[in-house]
Image 1: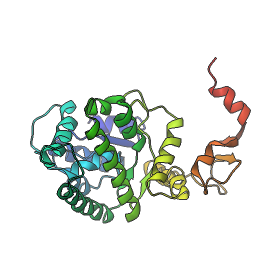
Image 2: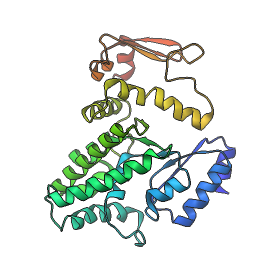
Image 3: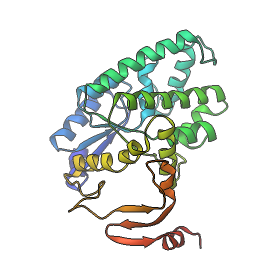
Length: 285
């Protein structure tokens, strides 16, 4: 009833979180599919990636939620929403023989085996994965946002988790799993809107994407997601009949993705903004 009410208001997607019971998750997904709503979200702790695949979720909202597939934990545990991720973090330490030295060869081998299984599962689906790696970097290096609290005073665990998410991205990229760029910007994450996308571009190119792949993930690929949500595909590429959105840059971003920041101006929905005008718009009074 709740999902139907919001669908009538014009919502075109629904986001599901990991704390759903299997029963409620399946009911919510069934309702969303019947209403033709795009489904995006976290992987439910109750029944994992296999469950999300079985109900044909459209998009996984963050790479970091996939790491639960790499660790041993009790899916039937009765925990509050805030307690689950600290519990998973502790489960990695326990899986590593209660050691914070995550270079252990046996531990790394087990992670590799599980990563291969995870990638193979995703390869057989049409699920899209959103990156949001800058949020993990902000949480683990600066201790910001809700995720940052998990790693407070646990430097080794923070470094391990950040590297694990980066490695997982690299494996997904190598396997050709479809991805879109996102940053999870907002007050809860501690990530700043706008500029954080440039950080995300930097991270994904550091981790294996070519500049073209990185740019396509936040333009062409993002437009495909919007089409799946709304039925419209009017941005993301420059062609007749689409919205006039582009950045005019001074140097080739296909050689270095950071060249996107060195622009002469921006065309947004057919309106041209000179660089000087853009700078005025973002300047503090």
